[in-house]
Amino acid sequence: MTQYLRYRRSLVGVFAGVVIAVTTMVAAGPAFALPPIVIGQSLPISAADPSAGRAIREGAEAYVRHVNENGGIGGRPLKLITLDDGGDVEAYRHNLRRLMAEERAVAIINCLGDLYCSVAADIADAFGVPVVGAMSGSAELRARTRNMFHTRAGYALEVESLARQLRTLGVQTLAHITEHGRMSEQGALVRGAFAEAGIAVESFELASPRHEDIEKALASIGGRFDAATLDVSADTYFTLGSGNFGGRREWPAIMTTLAGPSVRLLARTFRGRMVGFTMVVPNPEGTSIPLVREFQRNVDKYVAGSAVSFEGLESYINALICVTALKRTQSPTASELMRALGDLREADLGGFKVRVGGQAAQWVDVGVVSRDGSFMN
Image 1 (cartoon, rainbow, N blue to C red):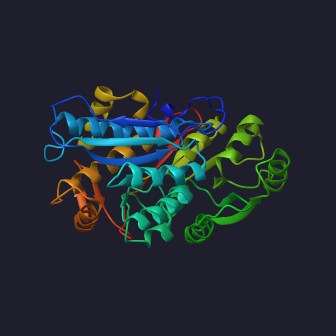
Image 2: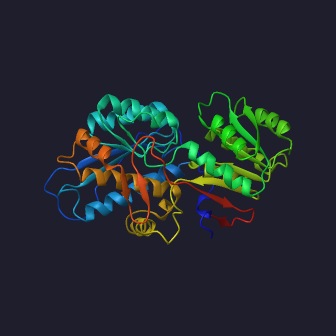
């Protein structure tokens, strides 16, 4: 099994409705006399494809259990509450308000995607609670420095890295595929960075995720490009997979996307083609970086092996950053944590440095899965 094959799992059935479930993790370990410090997250655990939500949940749980088994924070246990929003934005809003108003969470961690992170920023700002580790590269979110504490690279750096890598592979033409109504910053970034790399870009906007609209786009693409990059919703990936569109000859030989759950969806949909993607954390199955080895040990010890994924490692890192800042507070309140996060700036997590803040540059690499499934970094 290659380092990337963990991402190639079949979709599970769609759950009926949205389940608002609670997972509370306070790991077995020393007996604590003091009340817990609460942090929270809301994830799409019962969505049509729950693998990203589950990996994020388990990555954070692995670190929380590790902290509690080693004495907690100042003699207090850390309590992680994970709510399931099912991939529904209104359920997400409800969950975050519950975490802040009822559960008294001092931080929200691991918002997933531009829309959900924007909602998190608005609600957390109203409650005066920090959001740690937005899983989004949005420049607009990075401009909101009051309560957003980013630990990953922005889209601009990701797109530049991807353009350079594709140029080294001899790519000269690129199809940029998005969909109507999708609020995304990636389009302008793709056109600018790829033009700078000497790659001609043509954009295609899907009118909807429906079969007939994908057929129209394929007719226009018509096998004319060396590579394509997709910036589309999970619904579109679902249609591409269910309609067996991934095997169509109109697509280029190289298919790409930016870091996130779309990497896994892209690899599933376009089996047999080369898949390129950006990485905002190291290879989660590598062995050269102490942080990654620690992550693997704690996943094996405390949670399920499915957490060994890019999302799982990013979640683990975000929980670690939150705890690092909590340990620097005089008292573990949201306002004190906000101050400590603002002072943190940069943290060496064990062979991997993370800059914490708004516009700070971050680490980016590019991974490629060849047609035969081999991982190339």
